[in-house]
Length: 114
Image (tube, rainbow, N blue to C red; front, side, top):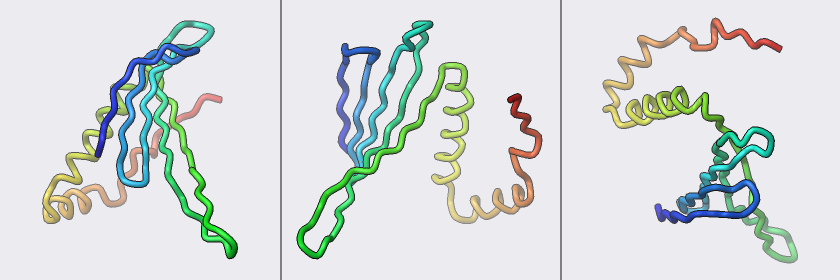
C-alpha cells in the first residue's frame, strides 16, 4: 500500500491523504462546510474496472463516498479498531466471539428521529 500525504488549498479542501492499494485508491479529504466552517472528512474509494467490449477494452472508475462528521469520529474509530482487532485474532478466538454475538444485534434499539 502506497501512501501520499499532501496539503490542499482549493475551495473547501483543507487537507488530503491518498492511499493506493492495488486496483483501489482511497482518498481521505478534510473539508470545511460553507455555512458553519465546521470540518468533516470524506472517504472516497475509487476502483479501476476494465470492461471487455467485443471491439475494445474500456477502463472505468467506480467511486463510492462516505462523509464523516466530527461528532461521529469517536464512534467510527472505535468500531473500526474493533473490526481490525477481530480480524487480527486467531480463527479460534474469532469463532468464540462469533458464537457469543450470534443473535445479538447493535441495531435493536436504534431510533431515527425524522
